[in-house]
Length: 95
Image (cartoon, rainbow, N blue to C red; front, side, top):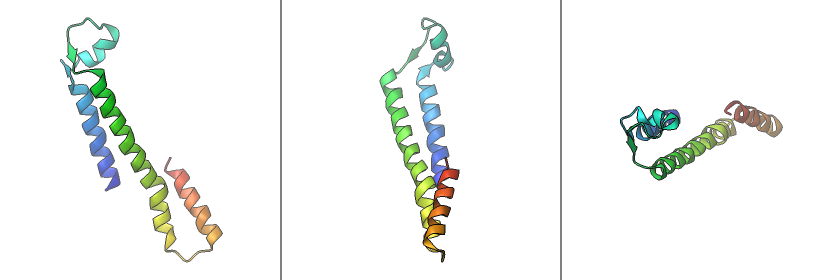
C-alpha cells in the first residue's frame, strides 16, 4: 500500500508540475530561452507542490525504512541483540 501511494503521488506531482506550463514544451524550453513564447502558473505553486511531495516521500521513507522492519521483527522470538541488529540491517537496506 505504501509503495502504491508513493507511486501515485509521484506521478500526480510530476504531471502537475509539467502541465502547469502552456505549451508543455515551454517547461523545458524556459531554461534555455525564457522568451520562447509560453507561460507557467508560477514558481510558487510548483515549489509548494514539490514541498508537499517531499513531505509525503519523507513520511513514506520513514514508514518503509524504520516502522516496517520494527513491526515485522517485534513479534519474533529472538535475542534482543540479534533483533536490534536485524532491524538496523533491514533499515539500512531501505535507503
